[in-house]
Image 1 (cartoon, rainbow, N blue to C red):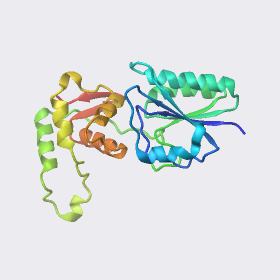
Image 2 (spheres, rainbow, N blue to C red):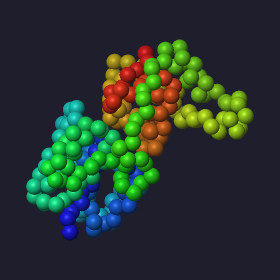
Image 3 (tube, rainbow, N blue to C red):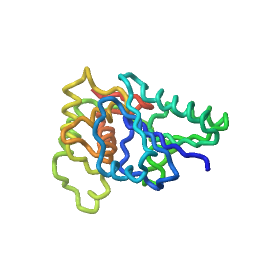
Length: 229
């Protein structure tokens, strides 16, 4: 039976479950940064039944795309050592796509997903919505203020609106106070949010990113981030 490998870009995606993966069918590799020393209890518990089939690969040093190169190396090495093996990369980083396309053309079964197979999230093939134009700083302040105020609309109409996630104003204030050190990519923004105390859950990170875009604080241009002010 050909081996199946799940390669997790843990800097980019911190899954809370293992979806439909079954012990004995998968080899799991968790690639993490040198300062990533915590893991959600739900994920740690889900990994236990896989035993020795789970390995953790710690990145030496730091640098843009450093972890991506590690994953590329392991796919190349394992595909040569184990012909017929298949690979699933869990990451939101579209930079993997040219490599994966080339591997598929060479006969290596490989794909990228944004969540562990079998989970509720959409696949990596889903298109991102077009980025909106950055809003002026005055509008950002008004939206942030409105997010904290109680809704005045009737219950039926309010239910249709996207509620601002807790601590939105805290995130906006910290971004405004650290303009020289604000995250420049989606990956670094998620890592930056992950350093908050108490830390955000994975689902909260997605909600916070959507709220920041909805408020006009930032827009996504591919994997790059543009700030309104």
